[in-house]
Length: 331
Image (cartoon, rainbow, N blue to C red; front, side, top):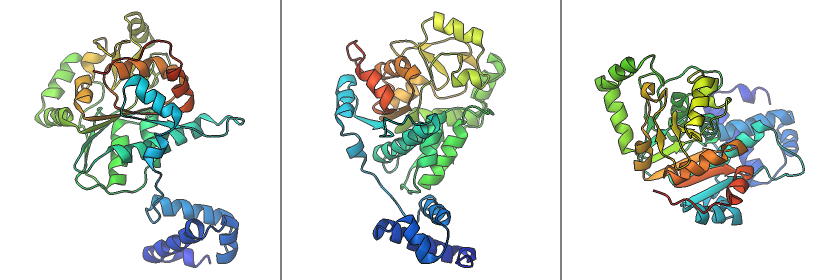
């Protein structure tokens, strides 16, 4: 069997298809398939994984089913959202690792995106671990006419997946062109930021973000471990001042207060990214967010009108449901 695995790409895809049919079509176990084709079970696992990644097998989950749970409907109605998708790892008796929780959030988020995006959309992509998890878990699904736009300038960080990587990965899965933002996320000075934003190419790229049909974003908290701090974009002193000024969340590198309003605090005047109003203008606004520490930020984002579709984990969903305050009116 090893020789079969070394055949050309066309033969390899045929092998992947046949293994997928045995597993998904006939219901054979991985051990059964391994015995039938005379390979190790780990080889079968890898072949099935490759079949999904290469688009040989397309496993689709009905997003409407994910959004039909009692908790999803309660959250939708409480906050006036169009759809709410809740990611659950299902085994409450055995706590899952943060990595597995994030993967499941990405799986559900990718399904939510597939349900939300429409043909011909201008799709804006922000940054962060949840957005990258969506990109990682997406199936290869070409969507006619879609164009992908990077919403936040470039960044080199070991802690935060940059907007250009998230955008390129999602565009690749969709078979769509990707328009990257040719500027840093954070300019060195206010003057440099103004010069860069005035450059014709960058100016045109930023203008395109004002005409998005769908935006995919996440939101950070304002703790010292927020991605903005870990990436070196803000200092602890700046964060402390932002908290004192009423900041509860960070959306597209910009501070928002409890009402979802922009707080023009450093380094806002050096940020090169979509404006908050650009997100509000998008007809469909998918926020993918998890973690208990982001409950206040998520409420603020919803109240500010930055969310029409919410994908979250079970823990955060429960916290949003038990919030004693009245539901915020969306803008």
